[in-house]
Image (cartoon, rainbow, N blue to C red; front, side, top):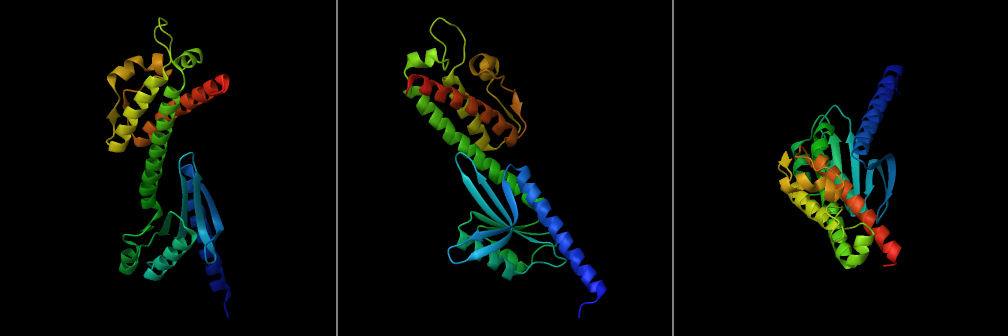
Length: 250
């Protein structure tokens, strides 16, 4: 029989775990992802109850991560890593993350090596998750820039001029989708290299406001800052291209 003291301790442990679970979900939400606690996921063989289900549906990529929270006073064993691996495999999730603030037994770490299951703490997962998400966003922006470049050059020149996608002859400096694509390609290559802070092209700094409608910063301090700037350029160009195609029935 459980006495009152044991019952109180049990309630406190559940409350602490729930708080930890919500803290984990809030972290992934801060990255712009959808995070659901106490979620049920349908696998090929059966349904699975998971602590936190993380999803993102962006223009160029889908992400599904399954997060298990072990807010324990002892290290997590290999069995829990193997269990999460099974869930990830059965559901087709991109990644499984096992979080524990007290660490993992050596067998657990070995079982996670060279798999799509990561064993870490909430503090440490912040770095790896942010990097992974930003890398996917950069890849998505690259794919969108390829689409913009193709669509831009497929539009007849006269239509591009009339819709403001490029300046007409004799009209001096004006918005140019060609220059935007060139700027985006240059910035994305810098993002893939991953060396920050990084400086932008000096020519683009000078002409950016005239040909892109946006002042090019002299340098970017982080990948996230670079991504935000690139996305602003891409979103604007996509809008202009789609409006032009709609106007001329392309």
